[in-house]
Length: 449
Image (tube, rainbow, N blue to C red):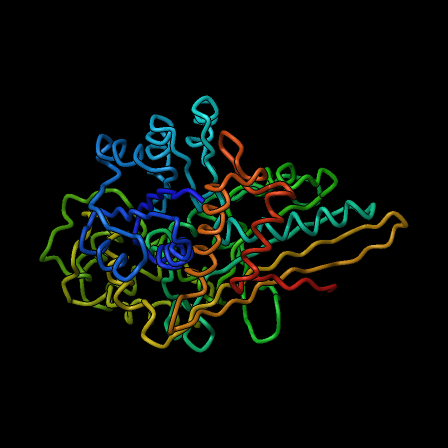
């Protein structure tokens, strides 16, 4: 079997299990590229046939040179860079793999990718990724038996295990803090009882409602991004309801909404945001409080946030104090904007400690009508707890799925090797990836509800 040269961009939380999977194959030669050489070297140490380089995706000339030297490039860097990576891959006739949703900017590169003869395989993480593998499986089975999927719901959460959810947000970061917070500021669109529903980014957190998955968990759920195209992607034209969304522990969405209303998720640069300013001074400036003392800040916060009751007001303000963002301490200013500065603080306070476990919870719910008119409800559920001695649940489910899909692509599996922009929405591609993902311990349990 010929050797394959793989370029992996990014050394974040999901990279280790992806690298570990790929380096099991002695024919794979892996280059790990990261802006910080030391970080890449640390991650590459001890891995078979893996070497580290300093590579910044913003340096397009260097990116093009390195991509062209490889058979496939895996982009584990922020999604905004994916079009740049794909353009470099088109020029170098190199295949591409990402774990991200296909964006409009990526979709525009479909024809150039086809002309270059390369496959750009996307959405091979957990959500998106593992969710597709099992949604397609059940839908295909229902259709094969003459049934219709009238309602489809899919909710996923990357969370701390319940025993580790010990902070006011009920959340810890198993991936980018910035990405995690901004995911809760997307607008949403879904199909409900045959009608398309639009939710603005400002209203999204207010729509979170209790959602039962299984005993032992207290989740709330809200819609995520645009679910409407999945009626077509999943081939369920008969469906009257199609909702894909996110899970959080009770109380989290209201807290995030308060942070947003108080200015903490703003991304624009502030000329006045410089080292030396205190957290209290930042909050005073953003909300227009009369002073920086706690009484003035809390009074103005209550006025702006419009908490529904005194209990909720006390809970969230107490949480803000725990974060230190009403204090006289001086933060490390990041990016001269409030969001990145807050993320720096939260990453210190809300990262997983040694021995703590994360949780990936993913559940599909299918309401099916059979040809005789009878209706039944089925679920597919992934409850994946991280292993403190190895990988987090999020890292494993994203990284190993990506690694498996890359391996299949490199060796020309006919279900996957299609030129252009590709995502796993068909039975043949889902079947082959799912079988291998299950061997790595990532498996959804299917039940009749």
